[in-house]
Length: 481
Image 1 (tube, rainbow, N blue to C red):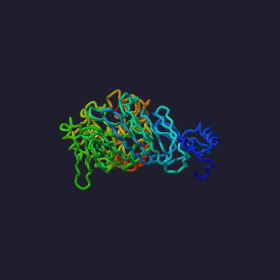
Image 2: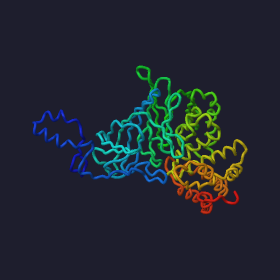
Image 3: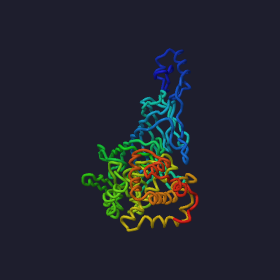
Image 4: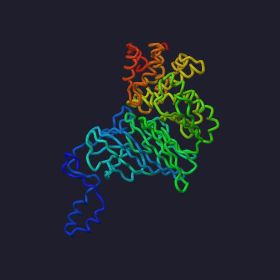
């Protein structure tokens, strides 16, 4: 019993062994008293349920209120032949209010049971909301541990923009991609970008396959019968759930440990594309050195890429410290784009999905800088070409009309145009100081558009209201670029 609580909660268990020890009358009374109970049912509740969503402007039901996740420990066992996934999610979190219940975002899979701080918790499902009611109330400031066991065939989600995410089956395995909501298809959690956490992801797969994830490979071990292999990955730096990944397949693995000061590289390429992707994978150390010159110190402990077959996914994604690309998207500009996201999007993560241009505008501008430095194409030329494209002006980059449009071209290209106009307004020295200082100031955190505009004005010492009004929020294309 917690301090201040006068009534124990009672968790239902099979009472028949206990009843057999009672006299018949007492047994009858006990049976009647317990007949209507459910796991976690209680009197004397002092907390309130956490909110079922964080009211994101575009995904209001995404995320959950009342707690802040500190760490996820995910233990997965996947068989590509049957498509079955067995998982256990251990979630360590801190209560930000007194809680009688809290929600997790979770899609599709069957829950086998849950505990909170080791005691059975009541479980309720309503759509993509999984509600856990702990045995005892959680008090504000408490750190608690929720464990959820689940299984089933994970689903592919078609997001509002028409792209497939979640758990994607491939020819020899699977690929988990989560932007913006797909991670809920393979583990329960607080799946809003504002709640970042560290991760341990342990994946068991059939012999001959490799499981690749974020962070560092801590161990690789074979089962006693030699039929299964378990890969354990650890991500120490905070990570938003939408940039978590698990890639399962027959991969060629390349590792490199550059000279002192360089970033270790771990890359995986599907064996059918490994030879063709090899030359560009070999350029990652060079591209990382160039990126650090422009964007500042790399925020993670290793880098690399995962290269899949064309068709395994419909896009590339900036999964943290190891972006996923398909062979048809594995080109120098797109690789540069996804690597730049490690600073802009992965380390500095949007406060809400309305701030998506802070990811895509910066990563697109990184492509323009690459063209400037490696292809003798000034960023001004890239800017003018983008300015002339009518459909890049369908809406302002900081104000997409709907959730379906948060990843549409205006967010990317008008976002990059905002940065180029900023460069012109403040000069190269100050602009590149902003490019480096912004991800350093908000390293491993979250930030909003207002945070960025305030930072740019403070760093430059200029009032940039007119620039923001025209290029960031303006509905109409200016007469001149």
